[in-house]
Image (cartoon, rainbow, N blue to C red; front, side, top):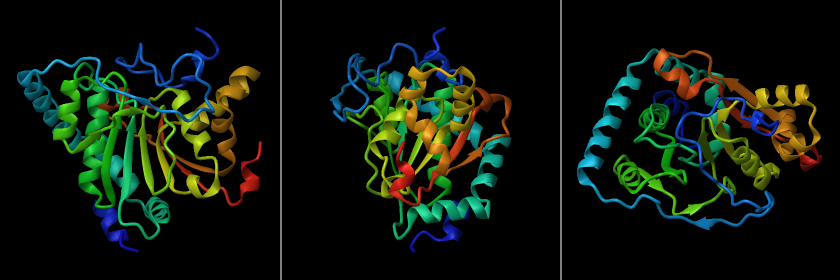
Amino acid sequence: MAATAKGLSEKSSMAEEWTIVLPRRGKKNRSFRNPGVLIQQKEVQSWTPTDMEIDPERESKLMQKMQIYIQKLAVSNFFSSFLEQMQNPEMLNRFLNILGSEEKMLMVIYGIGSIESFEPPRFQLSLALLMKTKFDWIGEIEVFDPIISLTESKVLNSLGCSVLSVNEQGRRQVLKPTLFFMPHCEADLYENLLAVNWVVDRLFRLVLFGNSFGSYQQHASLCNNLVVSNSRKHILAVKNFTEEVMVKKFSDDSFRAFHGSSWHFFGPATEAELQF
């Protein structure tokens, strides 16, 4: 395969309680799905930034701010530990298995929040960009959040990311190796992503970095709420064939951005395992 191990090593309601990881600021008042839209529907909505102000000075300031955060994270103990974890031979083999004969793995970032207004989204974006720098098997980066402004969109483009023009609501069908970068996203997005890819060959092609599914499952066993459990049935069912690797070491700056995050690798052997 083209992507070698060497390249890898270098490079108040019960429903609300389902967000086990406390949502960061900048994620309120957003909607990845319209009220009344069923989770099973796979429609996407065209999207443009709500804030269409063109301000070159504002863009310049945000770019400078992002460069500072990237440099700060690059020399942090958190990033050093994060790289060490990714370069562990067992982890490398997981990524290699997903890549198969492909050279690159697409990265999709959902729910990044406002990188202009809040610190955790800046750290999260910085981590994604540093991962692309360090690992030659990470290809293009696509980003979406309904609160992204035109200024943020332009800065994201300048940083080498593509901002999606549609709100997929997390329903991206995985047809090639894809890394979903989704720390501190709402549970609905994880559920939508799993539901639309609930077949063996799609689940095997995706890897997810986001909230710990183990935490969701522990909460489900405690709350014993049938309505909530049914709305998260894929998150709960996926535990039977998921390898979860938690991120455990943090620096003070990175804690708010990444606490409660895990890598998730999915490996159902047969379609029968996917039956509820």
